Image (cartoon, rainbow, N blue to C red; front, side, top):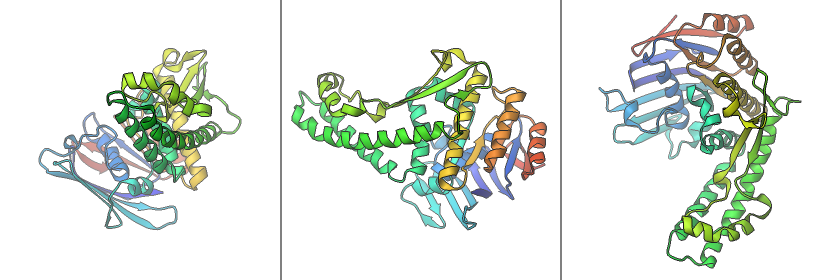
Length: 364
C-alpha cells in the first residue's frame, strides 16, 4: 500500500500543491504554521473524509475558497492503482469518490487507504478519557473484522432505543426488556471480537506480555469490557432503577476501556510524557504489525511533529521500528531531520525530503 501522488487544493494555507513520486519515507520540514500538518490532514481526508485535528469543516477551507479538494493515487498491495478524492464544501457537505464512483459512505475510503496516526495528541490514549482508547482499539477491529462495524451499529441502535425509553416517565420493565435482549446479543459479539483483538495486539511481539517504555518501568495493560460478560442481562435488570433515574444505560461495550498501569499506578501518574509517548508509539506500531500480519500489508504511518516529547535515543528507536515495519511513512518536523534521514538511507529504504513554507511544498 503506497500513496504515489497527493494533490491538495484550498486546504488551510495550501492554495494548490501536487506532490508526486512519494517514496517509502517522506520527511516534511518547515516552521510552525507553514502547512506541514495540513499535508497529513490531506491524507486523513482521503482515508476517513475528516481531519484528525477537528471535525469542523469550515476551518479546513482556505479563506479564498468555497471548498477544499484532496486527490490521491494509491498503489494497492495487488499492484493496481486506485484513485481517491474528497471534496469538502463551506456548507458542510462533502463528496467522496473511489475510482470515479461517488460513495454514499466513507467506509470504502477508509479501507482503501488505512492510516495509523502518531501526533502530539496521541497522549490522549494515556491521559484522555476512555473514548480515545476505545477508538484506538476499534480502528483495528474495523479493518480486520468485517462484521465489527455492522455489529457495533446494531448495538448502538438498541442502546439509543433503550436510553430513549429510560428518559420517558416511568418506563415499564417489559418495554425496556425488548431492547435488553438485542443489546445483550450484540454486546457479547463485540466483547468476543475485542477480547480476541486485544490478545493478538499484546502478542504482536512474541514473548512480551508487558510493554517496555524504554526506562525503568514496565506498563501492563488490561481490557475492561464495560459490563459483566457472563451475566450482562442480569446486570441490566439489576441496574434498571438506577438507569431510569439517570436516563441512560450505565453498562455495556460503550463503556469499555483499556487500563494501563505501571507499578500499581496509572501510567499517567508515574511515567514522564516522553515515556508515555513511547508507550503509545509501541502500541501503535504493534497495531500496524498486527494489521500487516492479518491483511498481508502494513497501513500507511503518519507522524506529526516527530521531535515532540522524544529524546534522540527514542527517536532513533522509533525510526528503527518504522523501518522494520516496512510501511510507507510520512513525517513532519520543524527542522530538517538529517540524522533520521541518514538512518533511513542506511537501511536501503527510499527517501524523499520536502521543505514547506507558507503552504508551498518543495522537494529538497
